[in-house]
Length: 113
Length: 111
Image (tube, rainbow over all chains, first blue to last red; front, side):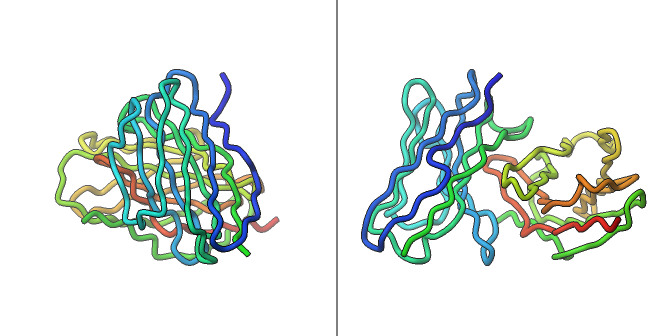
């Protein structure tokens, strides 16, 4: 069974640009969550999608948005990039509410210059 | 709001020895789940062990076990017979709806 796939693995963008990250969950998983990981703030929850609907949202500005498609694949978009958006972005999938744990992808390392 | 606290930013243990990583959390909920995740240098978060709050019995997965004290809101991870491959960041996590992670403990294994 294929794991959670995140693309791309690495990304370098310039301040002010926008970026889209992709996450393909484990087959059959309908929930996809996104996290930002930085050395200073640790792992911070961005949002969760379940069956194409945003079910939960963290405390991030509106520049961070996401969506989920009918095949459960999810995309995360960050507009007007800032230097502070440099981070590892992790995606995780679960079959329901994550009560049995989440399966994570290897992340996308975003560097904003 | 729920919080998860890992008070040990870094720990070291000799290979083959036992080490315990601490985690405390704060919640007003009675029904929730707790996890320990491991993040090796490869970056991928791996679920180590899971505990349901309504179960009094401590979860065990091979060399990994937890000491779950619900009243004290404590959820420590014990790693027995430490191996070099156990070296990683370990994150304690809580969920009743969305998942909340602690800041992590970096575990070094000394050969």
